[in-house]
Length: 182
Picture 1 (spheres, one colour):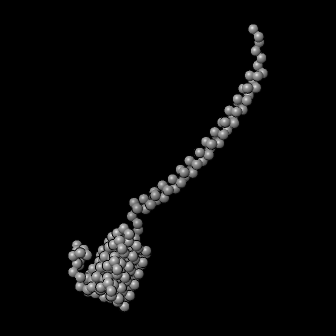
Picture 2 (tube, rainbow, N blue to C red; picture 1 turned 45 degrees about the vertical axis):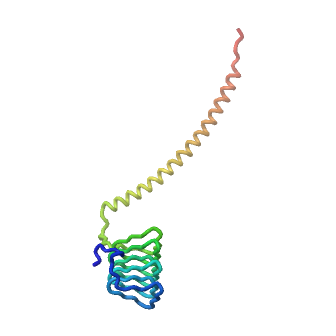
Picture 3 (tube, rainbow, N blue to C red; picture 1 turned 90 degrees about the horizontal axis):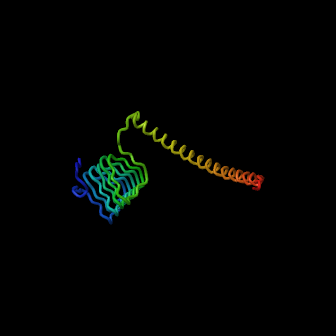
């Protein structure tokens, strides 16, 4: 078990240098650092560190890992996986804990190895349903506002037309009134 150790305090048993090119499956007992290229699967029983120049074309399995290079394949880490800002992963990830730095690229699915009960908790279902109701209510409210605005505009137009008619009628009425001379 690695405990609370991080990449800076791990004893590295195996190193693959940046000018190295390994063809085939790579297996290491303990911890390993890869700065070169591996064209095959990588299996490390301890911590795997893939440097910024490291490149793996194949699946990765490790107890924990810090990836700063490229991985073209699925990554399965039993404990904690960290993707640095230079990491590029094209494949699915399975781990208990994941840390992704800003700038890292990950395209795939992530499974956090958490046990999910057969039935969802009642309050979760209720929250989801209320979220749907809220979205539905928001749409209905927006539609109602649009309808009210259209009705208001129509009423304003009718009011203007009615006022014009009343003004015209009043003008006609006052013209027909004859005032007696005094």
